[in-house]
Amino acid sequence: MAIKILLAGAVGTALLAGCANQTGRATEIDRTAMGAAAGGVLTAALGGKESDIYKGAAVGALGGALCDDVGVGACQ
Image (cartoon, rainbow, N blue to C red):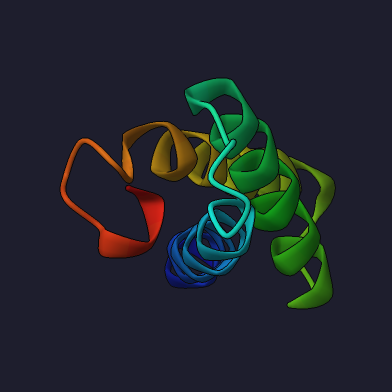
């Protein structure tokens, strides 16, 4: 399940961060919240237990918060 959690967090963060920055107004907090939501939803969709959903949300939040810091083009 750990691979599913990491995958859900990474994919959700990348997709939402890219969409959020199309307006040019997404802040660090916006990307963090969207990453958390995407990570949690995708982990649930992959059949995760409740504790796994929280872990997916945490991974997504971390990814959303750091995506522009590590140089992901969609986040900048």
